[in-house]
Length: 202
Image 1 (cartoon, helix red, strand yellow):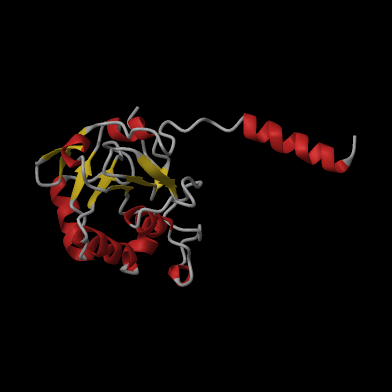
Image 2 (cartoon, rainbow, N blue to C red):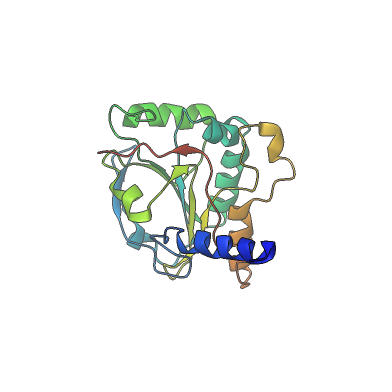
């Protein structure tokens, strides 16, 4: 068998063994209920008719901190919420696991970071994370006004913890929202997320 055929076979086998996405782009995003750091309950269905960003977050994750310490993600939160996008940060670390926070701890962090999500949902049972099979912090999901997923994966194409790599990075979240809001198809609908693993409840 030729080298090229072997490579082709290897690629086919790798593709066949890739796990199916729980929520594939183009499919309806699962509804959920969650309570934010101020004790207010939110449902995804509450926001039908709006674009929604789900951002899995973890204060202590160095990949997450790259985006927060640089001010990059806060700038995106302000930009998009000003345009009517609902931005939900979700913390799914279980009690006793790295990244778990109380409501007051999360509010203090948001204030310190000058973060501006619509709300920060606390998901200590990891119920919302399981619905979406959230893998990393960050892991981004973008949902359109009809309730369909239009993007899932990494925040950008620089899978490092170095703030300097933000310059010149292709920001997939911005790309998806800009395209969809302009009535254009989203060119990149799914990427492999990078970051720290979500610390699921057992």
